[in-house]
Amino acid sequence: MTEPHVIIIGGGLAGLSAGCYARANGFRTTIVEHNLALGGVCTAWPHGPYMIDGCIHWLTGGPFDRLYEELDILPAVQRHTLDEWLTYRSATGGGSIRFTRDLDALLRDLSALAPDDVVELGRLIDGARSIGDLGPPIDHPLELASMREQLAQLWEMRHQAGTMIHFRAPLATWTRERLRTPALRRLFEALLPGSTPTVFLCMVLGYLHRGHLSRPIGGSARFRDALIASYEAAGGETRLHTTVDEVLVERGRAVGVRLADGTMMSADAVISTSSMPETALRLLGGRYDGDEVRNRMATWKMFNPIVLASFGVSLPLRELPPLWIIDHVEPFDLGGATNEQLYIRITNDDSTLAPPGHVVVQTMLSTTYDWWATRGSRYGAEKGAVAEIALAQLERHIPKLRANVAVTDVATPLTFWHMARSWRGAFEGWMPSREGVFGHVKKTLGDLKGLYMAGQWVEPGGGVPTAILSGRQTVQLLCAEVERPFRAPVT
Image (cartoon, rainbow, N blue to C red; front, side, top):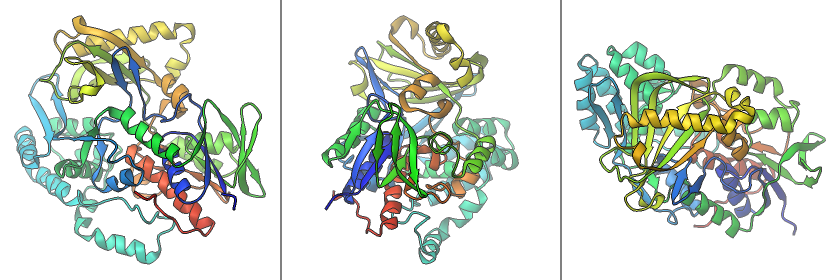
């Protein structure tokens, strides 16, 4: 019997996940990938003897481990459990705050910084301990969950209800209304976007406390390659360096795609992991939920585009934290955006990413898409200028850095666009918000049948585990449509 054919637009983590689950449920799959390689924004690339990691700075495990096991990412990928999430320091003085698994120590440090906020800080830490027990609804996507199942999920959350209610406000609102100390407000707002529901901060701290935050040894490349291997072992097909220009629709159902070279590919269903604006407005011409998507684009915030400046350095830098936020730096402009903090990643906890005694030092800096898109022939020179700006900023906090730089690498919003079709460089789509996190972004468009969406744009806030989960859930929806029982891959 012929297997029903599913075309998957995009070969990032969501597309690869969808491909693995679709193969496990008896579908023939073809991933159509714009880039020369699979992985999407979960990528890394060699530059001389160094590996420039463009994605995973910390990976959420715990309840998400089940997904990694179903996809044979675990145990193929070894992980380093994080004892410390990050270190925060103000450039104007005042010492550092280390966010470690020891929440009692964290509470003491934060209370010393802000003695007027001890009560609220205690409630935050108690909330972290409580809500760290919660996991994602893996078995029952919201679209398929019965009323009984939804009520059962609410019952399971009854012990966390107080935390969920108290910390439901966006982080910027919580700091303004609940905290008295300006330095403490600034600290928390440097950790996550201000639109993020504060309960997400509780969850991160809770997962850290339980040892559920890690970094894959070998970085994003090792994680990506394990998922690619699972997809290929399952017999999935791939077409690289191929761009989809249109989703074909007949009688209200997606029946295939038209490629940029005019080739028509037929399918029984289509899963798009492209950005929501690209899927709804370009591939489908705005015919299905076009107005709703345009309104969301006008009112919801997308992640700011970034420049990722990386330096291969002939120093071990073992005395520095692997993840470092330096706040209150003297404001500087970079590609149309003002930066007042440095977000720094130092690969001193993974010896596979650099030669012995060396590390890669990276900083993510805010910029704008339009500025880079209008550089024209000056693009290369501007990348060099940006590297100099980044290096000058880093050297103020990492002595002897400049003299020991062996390799320089700069990725811009255009890099993310060419590599992964990230809409205007918004590599994780929508910023986390109360509407997106506590609401629900549908994985379908209007009354169009046979078309499903997966990836960062249907999971506000983005991230590796939610991208993978969305791939699983789209296949669950597809199986429900064709009345086929869903089966997870056998591990």
